[in-house]
Length: 271
Length: 272
Image 1 (spheres, chains in turn green, purple):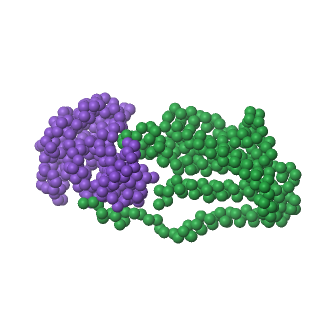
Image 2 (cartoon, rainbow over the protein chains, first blue to last red):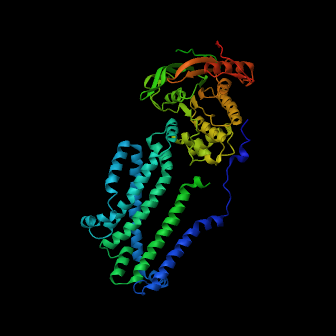
Image 3 (cartoon, each protein chain N blue to C red):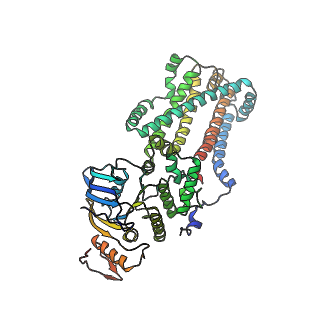
């Protein structure tokens, strides 16, 4: 009775690549880019005197030394702390506002207007105001990070909600879903790819604003401060060490952690 | 046009669905123009007609997804004023959620009902067996064939046990062989359930094979052109002379010249 004939060919399998091949295809471009940066740097280091542009080798040695120093670890940890609080709050707020905008048309117009007005202001421009409002310390920096990461998330989620398959909403309504259930069972899962996009863009923004805010925000701890301070005492090795740490951190977080998260959340796409 | 309730299955059941002078327009375009219609409980009604005759819109109104511009639609004597799990719709495209497995898709309505895990597991297992998908609970829609997806979509609607099943060209996108198999299965499910079914289809043979009555609609604006009762006992023989005759009649009303062998049959006055 049942249609058994379709069974054998029903399951589509992608052409099988070995795990090693897949990994290589993913990692290879990164390796090439990394080598290109190091090569360019090395050439510049050979042309300029070492007190202007120290060689990659000397920066790596300095990095090793810094990583053994507690004060440096604390400074990196503090940046990380500000980033995680700000980014988490911003993502959460952006998600909520984006979802609400998708469900209520009035709210959507409001959010669009808000975004078009506020998004053109670089987050770092708020620093002087926030310092006067909140005083020196973590709060102004965290607030800047929130502003930096909020808009990409809100916009991505809002657009994601607008692209939700109308048919899926109808299906859920026909099965008796109320508004809350529509959000939980249709909008949220449908919007997850947009959330991941929003998180990735927002994270890049948050990370850049963090360093910038730490450089101008009058704090005396954090990676941005570390670079700024090294610059003030003409310690170019210190400056470049800070830059290397920034690059490595964001490469690991963006390219590895967020990528893994994406594959986990969108598991069904990779079956 | 008033249509008598006439049901072959279980005699003339009580009125299940009553449509009175239904008008549906979108802006200036009138898609449905004063359709009146009664469907008996336990009846299988098929609606055929050219594209754009408003048959899908009619189903969406019956499902409560679209508010009628004018006229009334009552199911069980109550006005339809929104989606309701008692009368559910299977769409032409399967509309399965791609991020859910077959099992999770079928479970959707039960989750919305807030049934317990154990209840859901039992009911979904039953339903997957009913539609022949018991081997595939963990598969995602994109891993399935078109027929299997449509089975899953049917199971998802059956899960909430609606008494009115609205089917919007559910087999339209399937290959001919799969379509026939699924027609057989739909018929089996229908005969065992006593549900009232309204099937919108392009396929005249499908309509005649399954339905107690076939409604033929005309296009722009959508009106009921003709109602053809199919009295042949079920299960019907797809090749029977009776069905072939009815098919000729229906095609004639639709203005499609039936072709027998290679000879074109000129338009004649088909009497009903």
